[in-house]
Image (cartoon, rainbow, N blue to C red; front, top):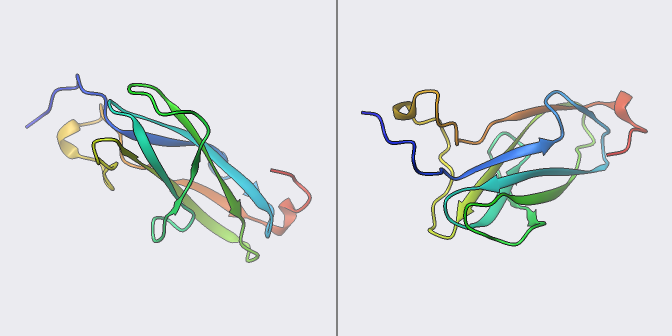
Length: 130
């Protein structure tokens, strides 16, 4: 059974860093993005380990219904080089949280689950500033 598309779904996106970006190890990197939905977005959490753990991020913009709300999270990149998966997850004033997985009832039209951003912590990226 398919659902109507008239309702704006809660969503967050990571804008920075880019997919497959190389980041310097043991450096503070500001992850940033935006969240939006039908109700005011009240919380944003970021995971730097593929969703195993989550930490609260800071909003840049005030909460407003039906409006984007930019956010940022300062991440101390690991000392150990490797591949890391970043995710962002929003919560709204109604208590709704982004779903962990895609709802197949929405087909390809509604993608509101957290989308992973893979990055590489790389010693060769040392000296690059975030």
